[in-house]
Length: 359
Image 1: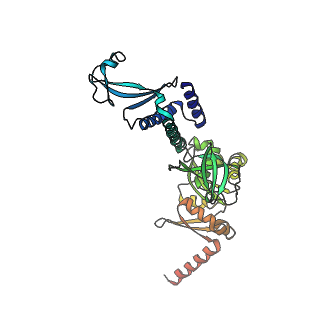
Image 2: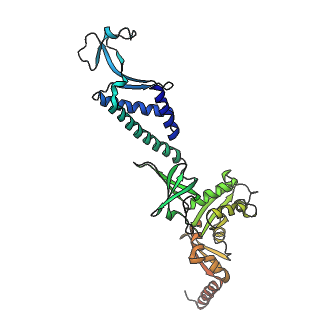
Image 3: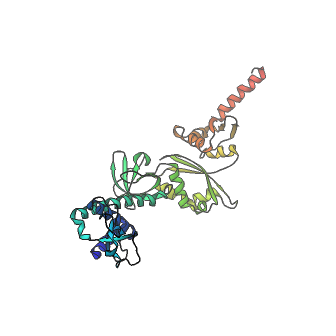
């Protein structure tokens, strides 16, 4: 029995990735449940399994008395004094019960309880393993797509990558291996639910951290990010070391670092911008790839008026206003852009009004 039990414990431990000590504790709990059911709910039943030999003992706590009046809770002192020489009347002892007395039904109950406990422990182990990975990038393999979700494998655990959290220009297929950002993990009655994303701004930030050691060394610091998935991302960076160019460190030699990220996000454009504590300078840089001539600020309303050459205006605004929208998100300033000709016209009209004495 003990050898067979050891084999079962070893097998479950290997298959489920659970320690043998944990399996033994679960098995003891399962057998106690079965024993109590077998013996009419007796609360004094104990089960012990030797961690080395897997020898099983089923015990019943009883009190040593001179004269037995309750057979369920008491035993005669004279009958057990030789087996328990260090015990006296009034002490509790643990009386062995034959394992064979469990019967088939009790054994089946123990098995069911054990399997249930193992499943619960597996859920806890999965949650404990991945809760500390929230906010990190993981590599997953696509299993299938159901409705609006991709179901992917993450270290033999199923996770959810909603289609809305993927890139607009990608159609993932079974067997595809991709990186994703672990957004959250939630406990449910069916086990932990792991949620992933490839479209959130944090995904690009973590990809950049993987490629740029200077960020992990806290030499280069990310000050902000704004993203339109599948279109463009703007990232503001600065350096704690005057000798290190933060933009150059992120782009890499001949663009190798940034191109590695661009490939992962299917060609999405990335603007790496040198952050400045001067909002005028920062706003001008945030409108990359356009160049601007002038930036005026209304600090009370936190709005900015930007003037660009006529040929730079459409580039500064971007397709469907995308560039100016991202620059607004990145800087935190509401930005309005005028062309040089529009600005000159407004200035001329203001000068004419002033000349005529009009308000």
